[in-house]
Amino acid sequence: MTALFWRFLADHERWLAGQPRTALMAANLARLREGERRDLVRETDALLDRLDRV
Image 1 (cartoon, helix red, strand yellow):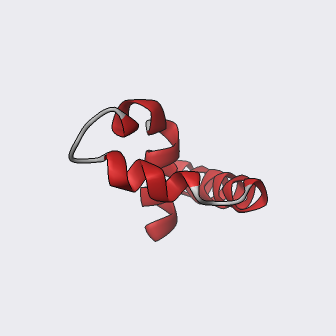
Image 2 (spheres, helix red, strand yellow; image 1 turned 90 degrees about the vertical axis):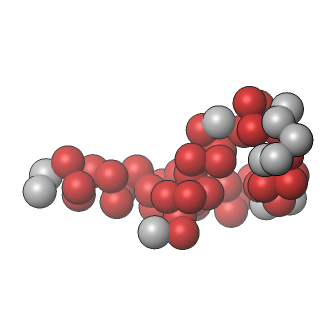
């Protein structure tokens, strides 16, 4: 489920970065390498797809 948290951050990164209480989370996300971000999106897409079929 941690992946879903990171995915939420990625989906709302611009807005979160502009908010004082969530800017640090967005900064942590920005530290991920491009390959890590791509893997994160792929993993969460698969997870959400399985949930849609339940």
